[in-house]
Length: 511
Ligand SMILES: [Zn+2]
Ligand SMILES: [Zn+2]
Image 1 (spheres, helix red, strand yellow):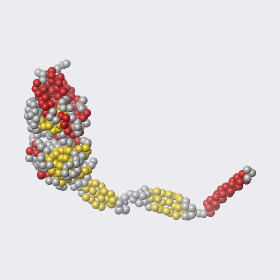
Image 2 (cartoon, rainbow, N blue to C red):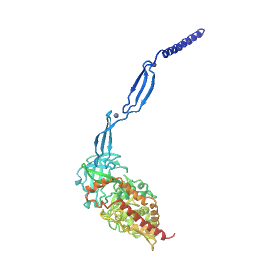
Image 3 (cartoon, helix red, strand yellow):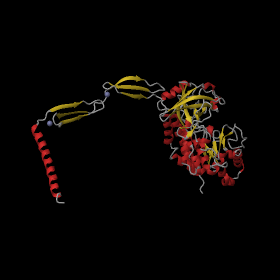
């Protein structure tokens, strides 16, 4: 232990000496050299900042440091491809300093409208002759390629001699048409769609816009079955404008729609359900005489296995009930057969848009239990003053199916020849009046109707409409059929019906 103290002293002395030496050295250097300054400059480039400073050659000390901003590229337009009607163009800019290039897209007129490119022979497609096409779909959201099998969709477009037809389109992965190609275009994954020509309506807006009004009506309705409530379009069609290009050539403006089948009503796989469609004018579709169960009146679009053979008989039970039930029986049991709010909404919508064609024909009936039917709308082209040929307009707001107040029965009556509507209104005029007033505050306000139309047509540039009419010169009334005409009709028609409802409220029986 006696060595500890001397050792510590030695260590301390050595450390002290080191510190003294170091200080001395630094002091000696500062004192003994004069800085020798050299200017150092690193020039800025297009993307990197510049730097300059004076640096001492001896000790490396720096002074007057400056940083300068990057110079930025000096772009010049070196190449340009003009946009065509179908394809975007592009401008190529090159930096004259570093050679870096930038591409800028020049959007085509059709840039914002999805395009459906088909390769194949459209002339050979018929209602029964299914023809496969190579198809590429291009939109700002998604692109895909597949095989598309087309058939002509029936109805007036197929028999009317129109130059532009409606097509059912089924997507597949393979040429054998065995593996479905399902895509989600906003309504969930599916492989079946419709390409609608909207031939009679050159605005192409009426069918989808009016169906969207229906969708919003269903949205505000109470007690809609969950399955219907979560169906795409809530049981009505929906769609969006597309440009169809066949073998590289512009073919026409279409809408890409969901089909009227079980998918539209959210019936899948082993779900119970059936869908009926009123295809033609006759007494069964007016609920006057039982249906003969054939495709010239109520068409069975879908029937689940567990309902096999039961849908037509149930429809006929409803038709017989409408004919035979006393008022008391009617009120007690009608809702076992049909959903009254859906009938009320149907009457309101087809009346406000003057859908003479839809007072019985084009109606859809869906059931989720094989017992109770819900009404829905389909094929709403001949609406808002447009005649079904597309060649005439009913600008007089009194044309088309109307409602009126009947003073003697103190009910609202319809001019539509439809037994279901007549009997429902005998007992539910109050419900219709209240529902009408509620809808007028929302989805069926003038503003909401105008906006729905303007939103749709504003997606389609005028040049695209004109290209469609040039490709299909038989499209009727292209000059006369305008959104402003629809607005004028809607305003007058709504005012007329506001008057009917007000008159009913004035005379309605007190409870
Ligand atoms: Zn120095
Ligand atoms: Zn550059």
